[in-house]
Length: 345
Image (cartoon, rainbow, N blue to C red):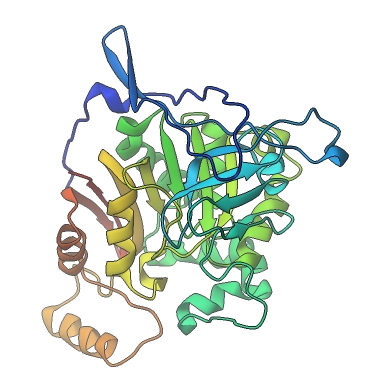
């Protein structure tokens, strides 16, 4: 196991302040100062989510304003939001979002906000490689935390509680900031991050509609999570619906081997991270680092011949992460399990 100690300047130990802005139309552009200074510490300010509420919601109407985190996945411009205020599952899935540049609207699907490029299409449908499409199955989504994830222990995964604790060590520099749990599956770690109350915002993000429905099923009976600063979002990891340099931490648990293009995904993660922001991922190594050289060569050849999942060696993962512009790479290995971390410059 190898670890690297890194530090982050104090301006990333912040909590986002959200001032209310009123009287803004769908097409308005809000101008807010990028930073303010209090007691010598710099903190980000994002536009608020004060919103226009439909009468049937039974709350006072407010005006549409610029969403404080989400961006259009097509042009990366800010989204305008209408709906009940607040950053939690009930408030966000009852809101509507619209890009002020390309004019495309994005809506919720009862439990999650769909921010894919194909959101709203009626005739066109798009599928991903088998390793991605598998997790869109309602059966696989249902079984993921009911036996599937537990089987990872045989490959060296230490278990969700220990993996969460390991990730939290890497994320110490991002406390008080925004965390995105990409390829969140059934929300196993998203729920832990939200319940920790360490982060100002947590987004559980996945391409699978059924995984997000399972996430909601797990949290709907726990008010401490349901009403926490947690959002459920459907999005493509290669087209993340966030502003560049807007996120403090990104987590990807057991996901790298499922992505259609790991290089595009990690480049996107680099784009949305703040300077000094942290990316932590786990995956299966293609071969155990302790396996005999001849066995490693045979297994690597088999992997290149078209296995369902894209498993990598330790060296390949480090090469990929650094090629995508991230720095301070470090990793911990146990059997075929690897947890790796890197930072935005």
